[in-house]
Length: 159
Image 1 (cartoon, helix red, strand yellow):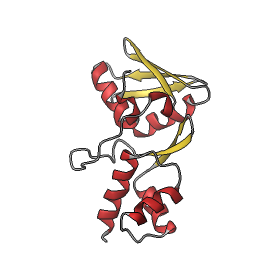
Image 2 (cartoon, rainbow, N blue to C red):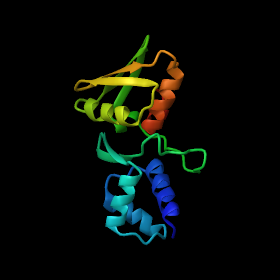
Image 3 (cartoon, rainbow, N blue to C red):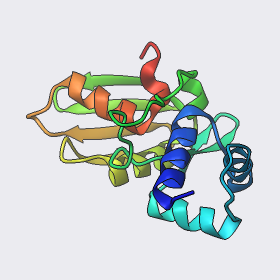
Image 4 (cartoon, rainbow, N blue to C red):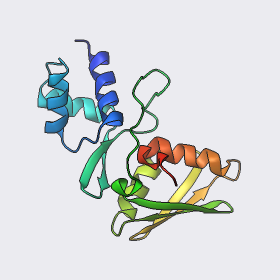
């Protein structure tokens, strides 16, 4: 199958399922009819800018919000427990957002935000279990939550 189809399938799998390893992703791809090697999959993940983000049970693959195109894909992020991704709450105060996480998760989650967010978020400061987001004053809280949901699909629950 063509590379574009394979990349689209990888994106669909990552946003639809909790995938924690290349081996797991490789098995899903192969069971979906894609004849792909581990080396090719590794290059595909690099091209798609896939990263691993911490969860309560280990790590899972996550796509950059700049790579996800929900308008063209039929796969939407699955609704999972927010604690599964490490984020406990999001609160706003003026042009700041405060994200509370499980202990030890803040730095990795802030890294994901810094690397995948656009001009709506000016920067982050992370501690052990808290992230401060500096928000562009031109953006609403709703827009910021939308961006955070793009980065961390599990936030679609009741936060």
